[in-house]
Length: 153
Image (tube, rainbow, N blue to C red; front, side, top):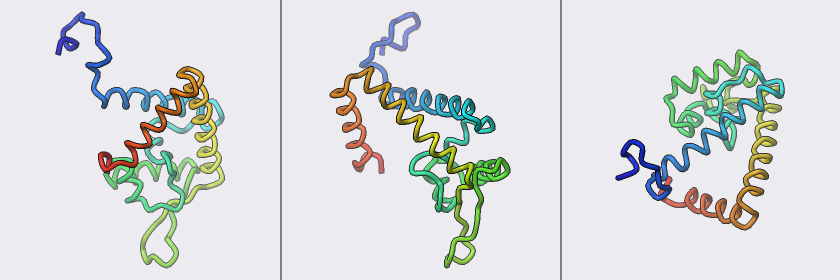
């Protein structure tokens, strides 16, 4: 690939899909944390995004959250412990599930999650303005079709 040669301009068609998806996702995550911090949730950090990502942790077992985030159960439990100490969530016994535990938002955790939603709505609005309504809708529909396909299962 010529684009890997030093001092050669990178052509869009040479950028692999992984980078095209990763870079905007990372930018969104950094912005979420920046705006959360500015909104009074100053103790949240980038790794916490793994817990707060859609569809959220409320009522979910830690093992399921680890699987969603693509991290080990131990790593997820460290993140959950951190968020518990910071007052964003608690882990409690799941009713009728024996020793199973589930994650529950505290009031502060629910407020942070609602703020994340607001930030994402603002980002979508900005991207819609940048791309134009028709192209933005097409972009979302294409991403949704990939999400629903067996390619990502």
